[in-house]
Length: 620
Image 1 (tube, rainbow, N blue to C red):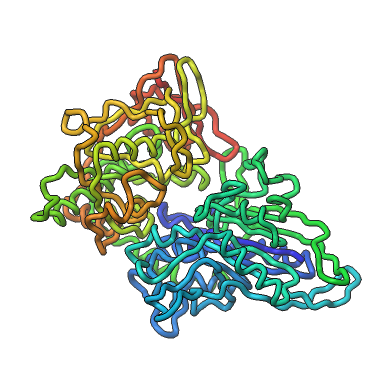
Image 2 (spheres, rainbow, N blue to C red):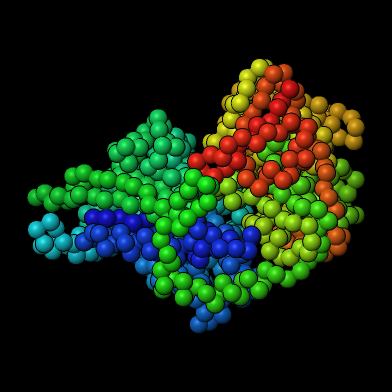
């Protein structure tokens, strides 16, 4: 039995980079579908599955929500493409909820396949009674399969789905009172025995969650490894983290066997993101007198593109004609929608150095956020409090590759550029925080860096376990990050070392920030409601939630100022570490902008196998 798995498509249907306005060789379900067809041709018995986060992620998805809508008789282009690609069963991810529950329910009407989730429920308010599953917790697919002797057998395949319980926090403004979530493992323990009792011969878990710990705490965002360890499932599809398994990235990771392609002995894949990869699990099944059992397995990842020695990305497969034809009309309408002018840019705007110096993209977002909230708080009890603005750069390479940076030339700015700078449909939120909260907030952000001690040279700067979008930069303050000190927080935001302190010389308005000072800090709803587990956040701290998207506020700000001037906000810097240097993977295009980080004595080294440009910075 061959299982074919995609995850975290994020509305990448065609091989196109909408932000750069050019073709992309490394994304798109249209190409993944070609891998699916080829893999199906190699095996007698196949099942094609999607592991969630399909509805949001590109301007095409935003265009459907903000402009085209879904009038009767119109199918959502992403669901239509998934149908054309042959998806047979799927689950929900956290980003399915970014546009609200009503839109999601309408979009799911267009799925020609069952969508399951065991730990997402409609609330009592929505049901008028007890909470009930939003979609079926699981499904049993009855298939006729052919054995090695050519004989047919009936096989009942149970598929169950899970998503991060934090959905209700991350999109609380849209979902409050509408849905509830349960712990992934507890939900599995409830429903997997029912699946077996209902006659499932195989149980496959579509788990839109990263691997996490062997024994994750209740309510963990990443719990796939714990799910595998609990037993009861025959195959596991993980996701959410945009990583690739099996791959050498997980060599030595407890509970994961890269060579066998298993998690705690369970055949497993995690197929990256954006349609760049296809996960393949082959199960050799044996029918015993009492049941079917998995005799052996093999797991692999197939890629739609490969990177040449020159650094160029070359597609390995073409587009599937059915998927491509289905999406072309919406694709063309999206391109036209994105070219609407909104203002001008006086100097180039890039995120090449967002992890080593204050990023002009984040600074522009911060300016827009502060501009907006000043108007909203005028005349309120919070009007006289100092206003700070927290923002992160969303495109900083990382797992998404060397093309995943913002690079906007001076000249006319369009809606496309605003979506490039702010790609997520977040809503603006404001909170009250103390000076002590700010210290911890910044310590959480600065924990992304590895420790680099005196006279230590050429150590990789970033801890790859940390998500770059959790590197918040707070504008309106000045502060220093001392990399010679250990990180205070773990990647999931839990406290690692209570005595560790990297943030020094924290000042506001040219005076030290005291622990009992009070500020307003403006950010997005994901962060404000607990996303990233930042100290000082939470619904009880929120004083304002805007119905406006952060990106729309950015567009309105640009339209107000007309021309965006060069942004040189030096909110923070690294403390000096004598004799030390660090390495960062950035874009090959960054060499033309080294003047932005001249104070770090930057040196461009060789390109990596993944196509990044290796950058050396001096910390001394």
